[in-house]
Length: 360
Image 1: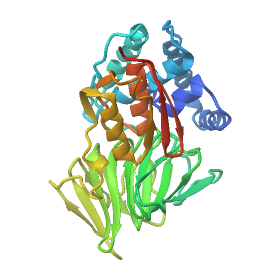
Image 2: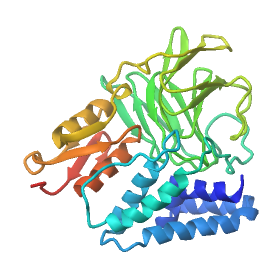
Image 3: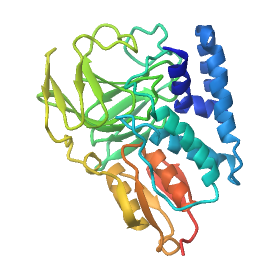
């Protein structure tokens, strides 16, 4: 990877941004190890760090937490699958000056035409499973409704009934790796430096940032893509290098499906199909709103993710939303809504509480 692409990748890497702005012991250890493994790129990393701090330090009149939320949301929307920036139209706010700085940077990144960025954080991991040093979490949905799970990178998983998922409490390696038993819908946070792998019933799904469904049935394991690009391939004895596509991988685009049949090694691709695989609302929900009353917006999110949103209906009865929230994970959607309505949110398991001002 050349210096320009590495610089771009670091500036749009959510974990890198979080480390620069907030810092944490796991992230300190991760990036310290990365610098030791990649000494030739230390100067580029420092330049990217200074750029993020400069953007964060723009005079905005907002708190650090608010600027951080804006940065993450704008960066997440900076580059679509085709490399075109998708604006989110909103009313003018006092923080527009800071947003303009971020948007200029975002437009610069969007000019790049690369579809995939080589992963410099690959390390030497060659075996399937959660990496050494990553604490595993195992969740089973024993209820009668969908269950939302937030991963440490910000990705969203909508876990179907009687299904389970195993994942690291914190992603510390150069790959994001989870194991699924059953059915689920994924909205993967974009991170070009760390691809995301899902292993389910002998089939491996690999993405950088996109949304898709996985169903395990009597006929085998099926993957259906809603947005972005997904590569699927049979599970082998060793995990392929992060920047190498296995020879037997099948590339799926939106509205395409592929199935690995039971006890088989051949993947059957079915193009021009609906992305509806699990028949759950999030598979077809566009999250596009045009002067939509906020109560309807929250209801659609509740229906899609299986969560409960608590807010003051009387206080927010005149609030509405005009936005395209797309395939971003749930928390990124909440950050956008908070940015537009000058609101904050807290999450406790499956409950979300919104604190906001009146929109009169």
